[in-house]
Length: 204
Image (tube, rainbow, N blue to C red):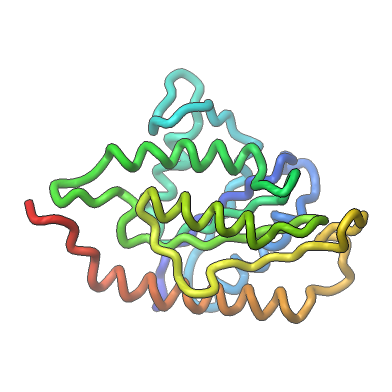
C-alpha cells in the first residue's frame, strides 16, 4: 500500500542538538517505510513547548496542536522512547496524556480521531524493560483509539548496568533490523486494510 503518511514522535529527553539512540532507531524505521512509498515525518518532541494537560490545546504557547494535526493527518503513528527507570520517558508520558483528549472528540458514530490509524512503538535503553514499556504504550495507544498490528515494536536494550548506547553500535543487530522490517510490513498492511474499510462505530 503506497502513499501512506507516517508520523514518528521521538520522545528522547534530548533536543535535536544531541545524538539520540531513539532517533537512530526511528530513522531506520522511517527508511523502511519509505521503501513502501510512504512518507515519514520525525518530530523531536523535546524541541517543542508541549504544555502538560489532557486537552488538544492548552493555550498560549502550546505547540501540541501542530503535532496533533500531524497525527490526525497521518495513517500511522510511531512512538519512540528511551527507557528511564524501567519506564517510558517523561516526554512520552506527556504525549500519551495529550492524546487522552481523543476520548472526548468522537464523531457521530462515537469514533475517535485515531480510529482507523495504526500505532507502533520503538524502544531503546541500557536496561531490561522493553517489553514492559511497549506493553504500557500498547495499552495507552489502544485506549485512545489506535490499532496495534502484530509485532508492532522494534527495540534494543544493552547489557544491564552497561554503558553502551544503541547509537554507539558499529552495526545494527540482525534481530533489530528484522523486527523493524516486520513492524513496517505489518503496519503498512493493516493501515491499507483500515483505509479501505474503516471501523463502523456505533449506529447514529
